[in-house]
Image 1 (cartoon, rainbow, N blue to C red):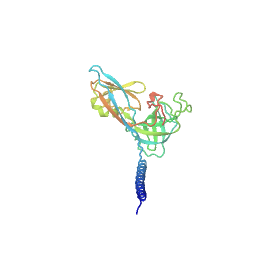
Image 2: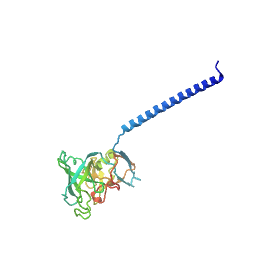
Image 3: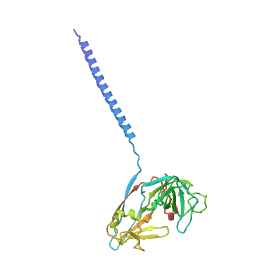
Image 4: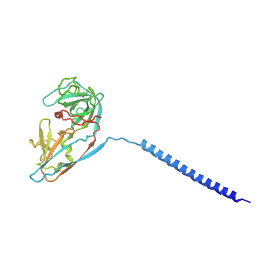
Length: 281
């Protein structure tokens, strides 16, 4: 005969076993979830991809207030074109001053370029200065074996203010260079070229005066003083400002694409038309 106390003990043991099994199942589920989560985290870390920051900016060229009241809008182009070449480089001590703008060369070893491959379309050389910032110079020519000739208003190896080599050198002789296509008046406005009227003007600073451009009858940008010319290739340097005089009563919306600058640029001499910022790489 089974006594009541024995039945109660059996029921208590059965309940305890059931509760233990339930808790064991929960623990197993939590372990499975933990393993699954850890696997997912590991997978995500393994597939992390770092890309160069690309972006775009929208610029509005304001409409004229009326047919006889044009408006002026100031814009600049800060996004960079794609990087086409990067390397260490040596600045040569061969600065050649000429009226308006001098020249100086950079040597880059181990190259096999086509002669003047960086000048068929205007390109800029971004050189790292002694403070770690970048300055942009227009490439006027290049050789096949890696020599770049740059336009500059001062000796890159000397102090630009005194012109004395070896004093407060702006650039180290051993530096780095990046080559990118330059923005031009033609490329910046190409997507909206048909919206500009013959009475609109674009003003660009050339280091000594504001040049006035307008669309001519051939669909090209030309100097207002020479409407038969073609100035589509006029370079707009990084962070260089332009003013647009809009005579039409409709606005123009520009969308400009490019790489967000990751290094700062420096501008102490506006005539050299290099870019400007305050931080280093």
